[in-house]
Length: 416
Image (cartoon, rainbow, N blue to C red; front, side, top):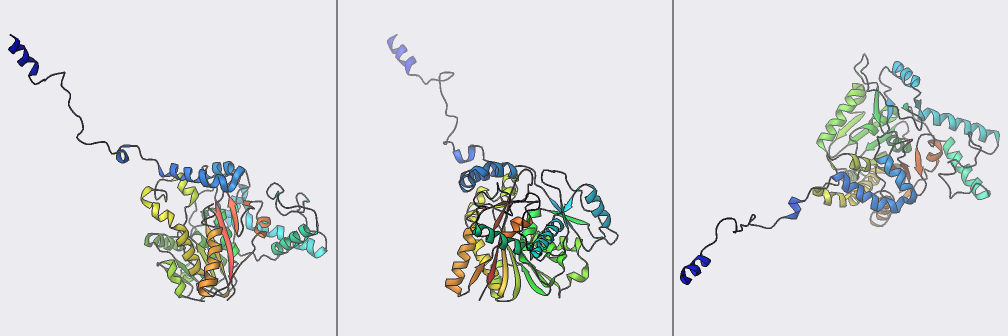
């Protein structure tokens, strides 16, 4: 009896008392945890960095970036646009470049009359609104002299032949899509109005040889063609697909005769290779690849904050530096280069510009001067919100009432 009980207790256990292992291997947390969206990663990065850079202004910039972007309608001078312009004006859209020109003419009259130039709306001595320039005093000879110099720069600005309509601050109306005219050309091109500022800063003169180093998708190139000042324009981009889009934009807006090889050349190569075209161009636009802050917060597709693009994102400042150096080397002595990004990052903006000036002086023996563009704030303060904290260059901040940008631009002149 005892032996039988012992054998029964030692028998293999089967049934509900037996436990089985469900998995042969341990969990791999990297593959089982939910993936964080690229847009969320971008927002975390911006919250960490831009809150330090902009302080109390960051919340308003942040909500602007996360809200619907505002656009302008760049009128196609090569199309039949009289009816379109009438429709836009009936919607209370205004040509912000024309409005700025009228203000400059008024300043010229004030200067010619010999009186102190003042803001027409408020009588304030400062060109910028006081809340945007709290650090600048409005009293004293130094402030007056600085202001007078700014006004002189404003009044001497050479406005190009461009029409660009926007809705006033606080007006969130949308533009209708472009229509074909009887010649098969589109009436207008919708883009961020802040993207025109680098083109305006370039100040292309009749007969200039111009290089657009990173041209696609084509808004800035189209604006350069609308001016009809370039003797020859070279538009380059590294990406074959983006260059194809650039071709399509130009074909939709520009007459064939202006796309002839003697007037326009579209190339597809690494922008850094243009350093070999030394001292060739009067004006160079360097609109570099960047973190494209607004896109990174709103779109998962082609997002620079994807984990597979970490190294690419980290190497952006070096790429931007190399492109700017190539652009400056391609410019003639006394030629102008405008560097631009659609990022708020100091690392991609001021630091790249300052480092490029140092490298060119030390390694190439090329002297470069950073030009003052602060008068742009006065010219276009009715349309954009500018940041007054940049060491060099100008920065358009997104804002709910004027949700353009971000757009950083800085003008450099090659001296030797």
